[in-house]
Amino acid sequence: MDQNELKALVGQEAVKYIQDGMIVGLGTGSTVRYMVDALGKRVQEEGLKIVGVTTSNRTTAQAEGLGITIKDLNDVDHIDLCIDGADEIDTDFNGIKGGGGALLWEKIVNNASTKRMWIVDESKMVPRIGNFGVPVEVIPFGAQHVFNYFEKQGYHPEWRMTDGEKYRTDEHNLIIDLKVGEIADPKALAEDLIHTVGVVEHGLFLNRVDTVIVGRQNGPEVLQVK
Ligand SMILES: O=C(CO)[C@H](O)[C@H](O)COP(=O)(O)O
Image 1 (cartoon, rainbow, N blue to C red):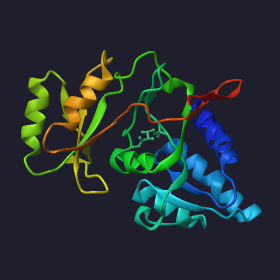
Image 2: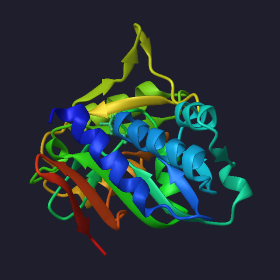
Image 3: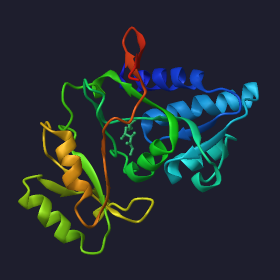
């Protein structure tokens, strides 16, 4: 199986955990796209009744197109299960997210969820997180000063770009990718980032997952974290 087949495999596996009546957090990214396709199929073919809360405008458009009912996070009091992708996961189940630029809404939805599941192909499982880089969402006002601070800290910042322009998130913020390499102390880095004025959120997701489904050549592997 190639990487896309492994992504489709875990996407299809994840929707088996969704039951009638659930409020489901829907992540963002190419792996989640397969999961939302599979969920749409269950809604259309089985008449599964669920409500989705999305983590990006992209996922909203896809889900609504498939007939999945979407509500604003402010209009639900909880989320039963959030299913999202990840860019890297280490052996302690610390994750990096935000490769798709949706880390802020993803962390807010993750935070509001009773159970959290990540779905990944096996290339995302690493001994230590960091080689992917750490996406950081920053307010545009004065963002160059935040960038300069990251440079002084030795975080090797790079502006996220798209079509020659600085990338804008769904909240119209900017993203700085920190090319830090393997992170010795993710908690210490997370503390520094979140206490930097101008930073809205960062892509280090520490202690934020209950179940990981890994797409392996011999089938999906389900890892219970908590
Ligand atoms: O955090 C994310 C988006 O902000 C995605 O979950 C992450 O980038 C994984 O994406 P993909 O499934 O396309 O590899």
